[in-house]
Image (cartoon, rainbow, N blue to C red; front, side, top):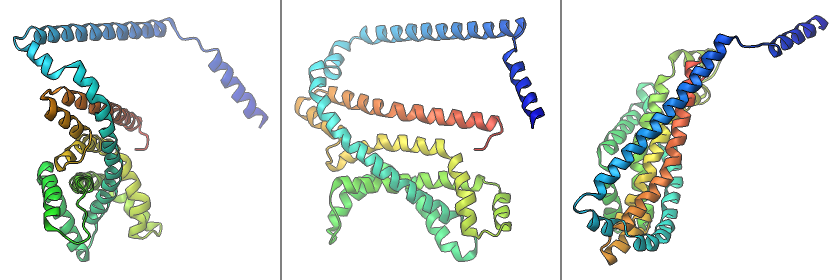
Length: 297
């Protein structure tokens, strides 16, 4: 034990006494200078591009009329509070529909990967569901659910456009998410399931404790991308009359015939989406680094 401590202390002292060679210092200095030069070139090219685009836009013959119609500061100040108030509905739809989409998508993916002839009806129904709702345009799905369900006058069925719009979003996006989960499940090597079975786990336990954790971990980036798309598409519930951010802007546009509120609503959605997309990029880069280093994904 004493010898081990002495060896450990000697190793720590050697690490503390390490001095990089002149060649290594020159290499690091060159890398830093190269990174600074690349950053400066990128910033300069971005600035030049922005200036050129600005000059092209403002010198266009129709710019004064376009500015008045789409970039009026007075209408922007009027629209912003109402758009933000409507945005709260979009955020709630994202949270509730996102959770429902993940649960339903996982169930459909598991149903599609069940083995044995006895599960053929489940596999067939799950495949038909994903094929149908992935092929059906979301806007048509929304119109059918939001406008068609109330027309049936079914007893006890809601006619709230928010609930119906959220249902349509869930139906469509769960089909996409189910395929993401299924790809993750099928990417897990069969030896993982075989090893779990050899340890005495049942098929259900192997799926729950061995296959699904690996599948979900591998599919986090595409799942986040689907949630980003869902966040944007929550604005489509306005076709049923729900007053979200898009509908709030549409009300002002219909009264004023000025399209600035649409620009405000669009910028608000962009501001909400950017953090989610950057988080998705960070997660993707982190998982790529771990995979390159041979770590667990």
